[in-house]
Image 1 (cartoon, one colour):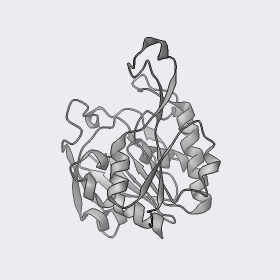
Image 2 (cartoon, rainbow, N blue to C red):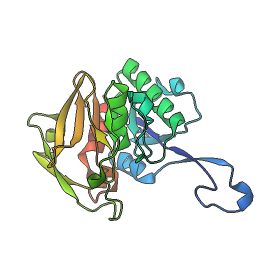
Image 3 (tube, one colour):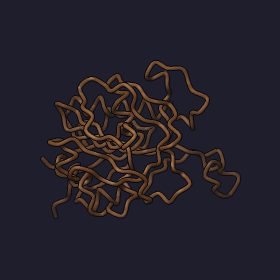
Length: 235
């Protein structure tokens, strides 16, 4: 039976204590943690999700995966984009930063498609030499259900994003950071009504980043961004 393309999905490393797991004697054990919604979006589009533990060598994945999904999560170390840490920063995982940036190096060499979601769009930008706004409070709507529609994103005519969603899309908003200076090699193809960058597309490779969480919206099982990733990974 034929299977879909292999889509690598990044996650987080946490201790059992951080997750309030029992028994207490396990509290210092480390776990790789993955949100299932990303995988469900990939499966619905016909792909086969592969969870990528951060302890692995990212170079080993370069020729084995057909596509890559960089997921949401913690803040990127500001030193990665030449800034001092702001007091408003949330949790950071420098090991995850190194792992995901190395995964992008591998995808760059192989030409594999990449989808970056929330933190993932920021990793794409930092990988390319761009910077971030370290704290943008109005966009961090963590007191609302994750599928709540918060604002509209207007999409550039003729862009990949517009071909997927049309001229605009209403989205959730669960991030407290946004792109500041755009990395070379990318175009901004989506902005919120306050001007924040919500979509970027690489000019010369199949890399797409969105700032919202399509995997948490009601449209997840038919969201075209997962269809795009799986279709591009099948090419």
